[in-house]
Amino acid sequence: MDLQDKDILPREILPVIVIGNGPSGICLSYLLSGYTPYLSQDGTHPNPLLQGKLDQQPHLSLLELDLEYLCEGLEGRSSNPMAVLFDSLLLPDSDFGLDHASPLLWRYEPERATPHLVLGKGPPGGAWHAMEGSMLTLSLANWMELPGLKLKEWMREKRRNVRNDRATPAEIASYYQHYVNQMGLEDSFACGTTVTSIQRVNCEGASGRPLWKVQGTQKREADELGEGSPSEVPFTVCADYVVLATGTHDIPARLGVEGEGLPFVCHSFWELEAAISRGQLDHTSDPVLVVGAGLTAADAVLAAHHLNTPVYHAFRRSVTDPGLIFNQLPKLLYPEYHKVHQMMTQQQQQQHGQDLPSSGGTGAPMDQQENNTASMSSGSYPGYVSLPKHRVVAFKPDRKCVLEGEDGRRTVLQVSMALVLIGAHPNLSFLPENGRPLGLNPQEPITCRRNPLEVDPYTYESVSEGGLYAMGPLVGENFVRFLKGGALAIASDLAKKQRAKEENHTTLGGVDGQTESARVLDS
Image 1 (cartoon, helix red, strand yellow):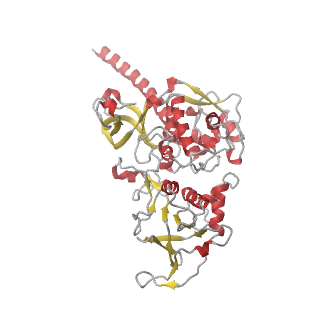
Image 2 (cartoon, rainbow, N blue to C red; image 1 turned 45 degrees about the horizontal axis):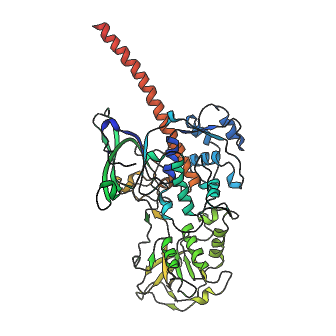
Image 3 (spheres, rainbow, N blue to C red; image 1 turned 90 degrees about the vertical axis):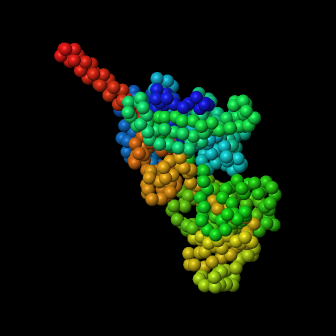
């Protein structure tokens, strides 16, 4: 959709604007477009408590039920109750490896549709289109799918042999783009858009109610504009409600240490893949330093180790820390990540070497371990050394990295490249103060893990800003299987508000009629 003519007049106010066209925004658009979940007459849920609650009002859609009541007593791998509920209904008992049919039946009811606009920088699918590597996704294929289109069946049509239940990022991106077209959602999507400002305004002619004014630019091709080069066209749209679904992959997190801007220090897994494709890394290279203990860091370890390139792996947590993602993944479902965790545990650094003074002549002693291939040649995983409870102190121009352990001992490593893979932050520059006032801790920047946006757990509406919703990684949900619960919560709350608005309008209409009659009688 082009926004060239979308400078909204008061009579053209949209009910909902969604910022972000990744799986979060796509799933919400599906629900807002009139696709409605009901309990199937033949459907049963393996949880008898939940089944009993669903049986109490089987004629109502899920959007009309008391979702907070349905959430009571459910447990799952997410801390958000709505995420656990919807995941349990879409994929019952999937955590146990079971393929239990969903008890939900989806009906297309266009009369329930809520007009909305989904804004995104690229094609539908969001950040998945930037993940061009061949690594498998963390989640099983059915965990990545959206309601109404089985991903595994779609994959079988695209490739002859589906060797396992996991897909590549490129396949997932293609699936999401196809999903939007298959479900007829494309008219609600405006791609190539960058939002630059969101603010509360009182629009003239809009009954004095506060609205959200969203401003930005949309990329237009040269032939569309009749000019010789592509351009960006400004747009302004207004809406009753805004949903933030931008994800958190915009800005790589940084350590904030000396030398982090040097050319050999990278902050993206894809920079490692680029170096590999250029033939810059092999078994003769100096070691690669991977900083971080998340899944992207694990992917980097696996990619380098596959080439027999030596790997130093530094991270701040203990390998037994329950917060470590590897300690939360089923071993049978994720053998490659279990292997990385084994490497981290069994191949820890052994202190040795001559103690040298630190750079200033004072402070902690330092182990000089330049090109320390000897320390990598032993153990179950030669070519890999784990450095738990270490932090990076500095990167030096001669490709040396200074690390410090929890005991204060410093280690110098000679490397070919360093990969700082410690997560990413969302780009909320279009919000006042980059969205800080909306976080759990208004004094800290918004981050997915430590300081997500604070929302009501059953509606996903911002606690501090009415009419503003957030979902997906912005509220701490990183997995597609769980972010769908946010779409259900928001769609349900918006439907509830619409019903209340209609009932209020009917009531006021009756009162106005009585008042008008009284005026006639008084005259």
